[in-house]
Image (tube, rainbow over all chains, first blue to last red; front, side, top):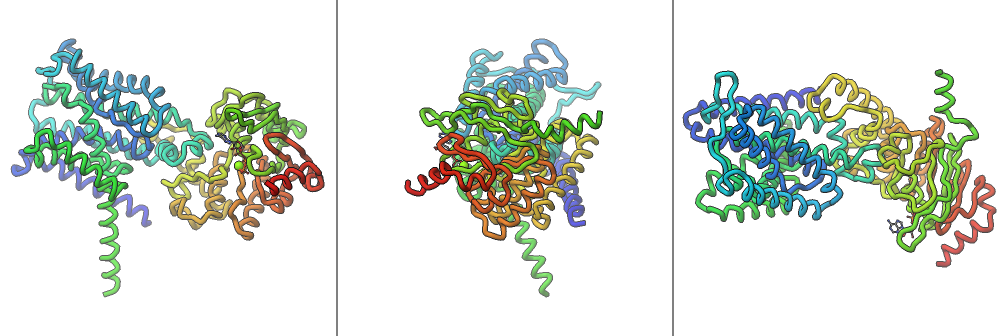
Length: 325
Length: 268
Ligand SMILES: Nc1ncnc2c1ncn2[C@@H]1O[C@H](COP(=O)(O)OP(=O)(O)OP(=O)(O)O)[C@@H](O)[C@H]1O
Ligand SMILES: [Mg+2]
């Protein structure tokens, strides 16, 4: 009975969130934030992947922007230069990025801890430099990337693209939540808990690490493609190693082991980055570093999870007081 | 057909469930296992004893494939396991517990056991992501089975607790339940009695007997002699990586070399 009620609560929260998301672009006062909300959606997609990898499986990646970048560039090149339909370009980009993650996944997950962190960081640096040197347009990137469209309906305004991005974002969140609450999700958490114990009960540790890495790469690639087809302009700067670090900050603030926290993490950092810290220029990274340190020291379970816990405690106390009177 | 499967599963009485042939393991210059020949009889409780550093845990690690053997081989039900990775050995029917327990601290008691059902269920990422009907069906079986093992070790009232919130004695029972959930034919227990009080040891010994009644072969590594002698139908003694004796509990207690090995340890 209690469990059922708890399940309904989640649906209620999700429904309220959906309603809020739908109302944002319609509401005049919030309308100016539509573009910001689009970025929050895109970053949420990338962050959820990292949550699965880092929060659930315990495998660090400091290179998630790499896959965001390959998704964007493959989509852009195919649709603009080769004239491929943008949807097909997006699909090919996701498959190619997933395959790339699969191929590098096996050697890279032989490494653990700090070595894994350095290797994924290096991956991000290499791909970033390749994009700058060899990517079309070099450091300036590409412009004139075609928009996505369904039939005759072209996603040519922020208002339309907002719904497109959040459709994908919510799909990714839902899929991730389903995975977390499954046999696969338990296997991932088991790997985080103890690799030796996980193997002893038949979990193919190496394979699961690579598979979840591939999934996180596909999420990032989809977000990258959506970015390319909606900005109509991309440049390597959007996929630099710095962005990978920002994604880590988002995941950590969201509470690593919480799928829905990813929205919170992505939103907090995006609002800082695109609104509050605009005056700081490139110094904003110092603030993120500081936030990362403070969160890790004082609430290693993540800001989102901590707030949820505090809320739970407050409600408990409130209920107690209610019972007393 | 059915009869054939039955005899295969039950095992021929004369055929051992596990054999090691001249099994050796060296860490650099240190020889932890030195040409060990073992034949573990199916359906029995076999104890492996020996002083600290004798190589008991190393033997388990080589049998389960965590470490590759330096030399020699391990056969499970007559099949050599040389190139079989650890997770596949678990699927074949070899389960274990660890000397340092190694529960999943990021899960509840019940989830730990459910995770143990991994090799007996199939659905993967796609089934989970899309909540396919087969995922639903398998989850139901997994929960039911997990509850069965939870109750078997007597932790029924602790299902939703975090695994590490249990006292050590119950943690060890949980580790056994998790191993049982893989539905093994051979269960390796590494010092399950260590750190338990008298009552807990009694419960443990009852549990191990019940496991044997379920026709699961047990290899028990244990320092607690009364526990070993009360349970084991066959005792193997390791010292400095070598098998120095084997026999029934009564024979082992009188064996001069065994007594010397244990006395030697006390002098050290
Ligand atoms: N990974 C390893 N690397 C190097 N040496 C090891 C390793 N594992 C075990 N050893 C050594 O191998 C020898 C046997 O160790 P093992 O843990 O198998 O003993 P044990 O019989 O289980 O002892 P105990 O009763 O104390 O648990 C010891 O000398 C130990 O130091
Ligand atoms: Mg040991």
